[in-house]
Length: 262
Image (tube, rainbow, N blue to C red; front, side):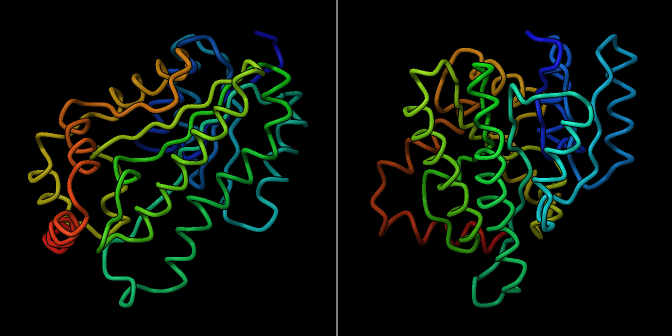
């Protein structure tokens, strides 16, 4: 790879994003770490350097802030870097009924999960195409079905998967790989942000639970292999298949009850 190329990883301060940054660095990529919590990014950057990796570019940034994409692009230009890979991992969800949740918070979820992901993809796509690189969009098993009680999040991840698959088809002749990573439950800060009973959620979902490091490994390998969609874990694959086959009239009440239990 060219010396000026970088892999941009958003949401790199925790969970799947942090593990993906570690993997890209171990595989010899220069990485650009993006998240709001600069102290965590600096700690991760120091860890990567200590392990023998190239010093990452750290960009502490709220991706939903006005002009955030422009500031990220400027930070890369100032560092003499050009995007080869883009990992759109930053995102969050809110559990609860649409009519009862804060409207502004729900719109912020749409902004980060959909608008920001799309905006970063469009902004860095010319460089990625020129480098014959790739895009890894973190969706969810939630992308395969509606989610009453978690409606905006499920819908946003359906967009991510649909957008990723369509983009993969459009770019297949350009040598650019696009993969939608669709994990199930993972131990990260996501549950606390969403408003889950963390302990209860982890106990209930234990059969489907995978560590963030394993989800990241499968996501990276799927991107390298040019796979369009990857669902890590046998239980999660079964969940997706069942959701596709079950009649919606049967499935929706079950999903609604599951969210209320959370």
